[in-house]
Amino acid sequence: MSDVCDVTQVSERVVREVRDALPPEETVLKLAESFRALSDPTRLKMVLALSRRELCVCNLATALGMSQSAISHHLRTLRALRLVKFRREGRMVYYSLADEHILELLSVGVEHAREA
Image (cartoon, rainbow, N blue to C red; front, side, top):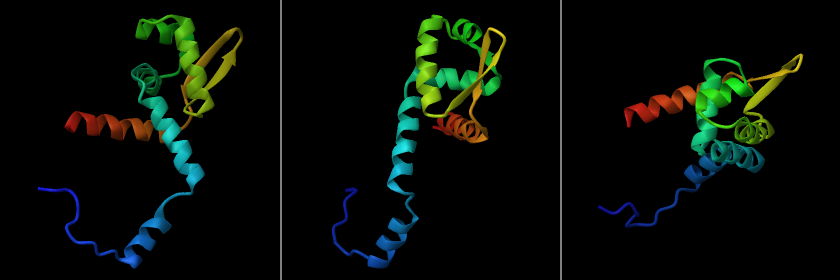
């Protein structure tokens, strides 16, 4: 079975409907960057850990068995993409997910992966 049409029959109405429903190119690029960041197993584990609770760098590093330096490097990427946020409390810095959308994305992704 081929996954290519045997007959070319383009429906301009359908094509227009699909094109009109696509988000702006800037949004697509931002989404692709976020997915690219989450495609890294280390960053994905970090975000999954932060989906459970707010964590400081030292607890996150210990939980994942990594150095604080490596965790900080990945956190910079996740912060730049607005996937995580931080707050200071004295000399401590705590990280958490940026918003509920990230949690929803993770939940759906984990559910999909478990069903596969």
